[in-house]
Image (cartoon, rainbow, N blue to C red; front, top):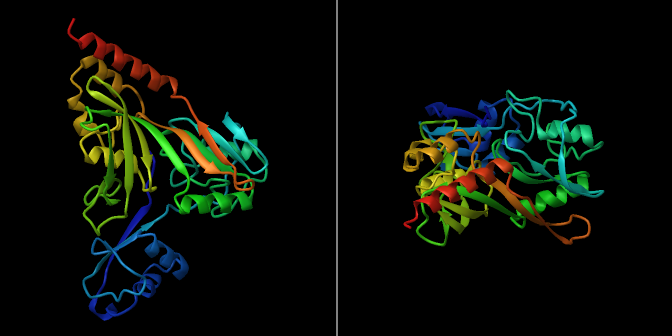
Length: 327
C-alpha cells in the first residue's frame, strides 16, 4: 500500500510559550534541521491549530502543532531490469509512460519495483538532485495513476524543470472517468486540501485556512450514461488533488476505492458496477504533458493513449448506455 508522509503532533506547554515556531520545532524535532523546518513551514506542511503559520509565529501554551514529514529515505536505489515505455529521449531528459500499479520512487515499505529502480538500470548517471532515492524524478503520479512523466538526466535539466514546476508553467492534463453526469460542460474546483481530520492516511478538502491552496479545472469530453469522461488540468500539485477534488463535488473517479467507494452505489447497472469493482485501479490517466525544453527552451508537447483496461471499461460503458436508450 502506498504510504503517505508521517504526521507528527506536538502540544506547546506553558514554559515553552513565546518561542518562534521554527526555533520551537527545531528543538522538539531534533532529527530535523532548522533549514528543513523552515522549508516545511513555507510549504504549509506545518499547521498550528489546523492553520498554516509563519516561521516567526510565537507559539502559545496549548497550541496544537502538526508537522507532515516525508517518509524516511532509502539511501540507495537498486537498478532493476524493469521494462520502460520511453516516449521521448535526448541528452537532457526523457519522457516515460508509467503504468498503473508502479510506485514512482522508493519510500517507506517500498524499495523494489519502482520507476526509479527501472531508470537506474536503463540510464547511467541520472540527475541525483535532491534525494538519492529519486534519481531524475521531477514530479510524481499516484501508484494507480498511469501516464506521462518527465525525467531529468542532468543536474542542469533537473533544476530547470523543477523551476518550471515551481512556477506552475508545466501543463499536465488527465483523462478521468467519474461517476455521475456533470451538470456543466466545464468548471473549476478551488478548495484547500489538507490532511483528513480523522483518517490521517487520507487527504480531504478543508475549510479556508486549514489546508493548502488547490485549483483543478475540468472539461466534459463525453457524457456516457451515468458517467462523465473529463479532461482535467490541476493547476496546483497537492497530494491526491484530482481524486479529492472530484469526490468533494460528488463525482468520484471510477474505481477509486480510497475516496469514492461510498458513492459506488450510484452506479446502478450491475455489469458496470461489477466491472468497476474488478478494474484493479482508478480511471485516471496523465495523457498529455507540455513543458519547455531545459536547454533549447522549445515547447514540447506529448500525449499518451488510454491503457487497454481503461479503453475496455469505456467501451463497456458506451455499450451499456446505448442499450438503455429508448428504441
